Amino acid sequence: MKKSFLLVFTLLFTLPAFADIDPGPLLNKVTMQLQSQQWVTTNTALVNVGVNAAINDQNMGSVQNDVVSKLKQLSDSADWHVVSFNRSLDQSGLERVQITAQARLPQKELSGLRDKAKNLSKPGEAYTIDNVAFVPSDEELQAANVNLRNDIYNQAKNEIAYLNKIYPDQKYYLYNIDFMSSPSPMPMAANEMMLTKSVGRTSVTPVPVGNKAVLQATVVIASFPEVVLQKLKP
Image (spheres, rainbow, N blue to C red):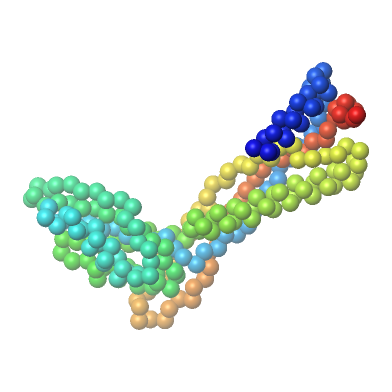
């Protein structure tokens, strides 16, 4: 409330000085494109597991809990989430259920993953590894975006300082900054050897997988018109 009062007071105080001036066209503007990029590394993979089952209608209520319980056998430390659940009735009167579950798994748990899914399967209930992608998590991407924005802010700050050094009478300031969203880093497919490797063999040393994140911004630096500065002087 206090800030709003000060803003209104300032506008009312300076309004007479700007009554006959449109400062917009008089601004000395410098427009530039700034870019920042960094590698976003991750040690976990996003794993999608498919479940196809034929069950009686009486067992429908417990099927989701049963699936999550079995997924814990793939990784008991992962936070499994069911992201799709579809059901249909076949000609035999059984309920056909298609489920997709996903979780982030560390690289060390990808070894022998397909064999584990196969061992979970039984007649009328099949588990498959549908997709494994090394794509950064939302938290990793958010942290990277914070770093990228801070880097662009610093670039803009340095540009303003440089302009004010070259043109000390202009008093340049940040007029506008417009961030342009960039596409999310493309997922890196998991190494097939790592997925099919049996648990009893020598494990593969985990290697951080990197994806490049890029952020661009249009930055406008401007200096206050001298005629406006003269009007503001008492």
